[in-house]
Image 1 (cartoon, helix red, strand yellow):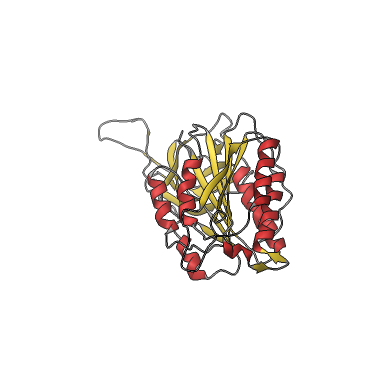
Image 2: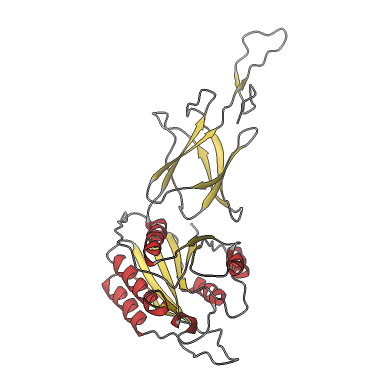
Length: 336
């Protein structure tokens, strides 16, 4: 199974960390979270009751503490803008480094927290390059869910295109799904991320707490879905048909399943990634489509579609009692 990379981009001059409590099934896939921390000079700017840097440090150390003790979860830390001071007409766009490699346990958490405390905001903001380099931070893994949380004030300073990086990484089989939390950012700049994510706004520390809680829940929790294919009587009896889940943003095929019912005539339960917004296509004749499906992380979600199918009653002159033949063709016109 290919490892999947999901990017959660948090644009900050930002707030406090929520109280989060998650448990992981010991038999589930491993979750690896890479924090990318912006230590560029612009993070020294003031926001609410402190500098962006001070509040972002508090945010990240609290978040790391909240992730302590979660099974099957490893953390890593990449920082940019912290090694070379920015000067008039001079900036180092290679100023990005993996400071703490992936590991789990208290020792790893303390390494990350100590590194965060020691960082000073100095340099430029190579967002696209940091995303590109971060792909190499994840060792090969056949059963890993890889998440990137980028904490930044959101100003790309190296004239590079995060969307181009996104396309290049997808070509290598790395999938991106960012959440962009914006504070006081020029909307024309946010438009650069239309190709890879959706935007959430945080105007206060408290609102950011709620948004971050949502984002972390999306990253960590196991999520299941059940697809009810409704017949002409609005009963979930239709089955034995292929269905495809596409990423609504990129149009990329994410999952293909054969819809089946169990012995109790209940649709099968499927595990899916909650970080996507989906378009579901049920391959009946004609096909049935449901757009903009958002699932709730950590919950069992039910998706319902009108997908009644009929049958053909074929008769040949001179023959009687011909067997009824199943068909995906519609027996009657059905309003969808």
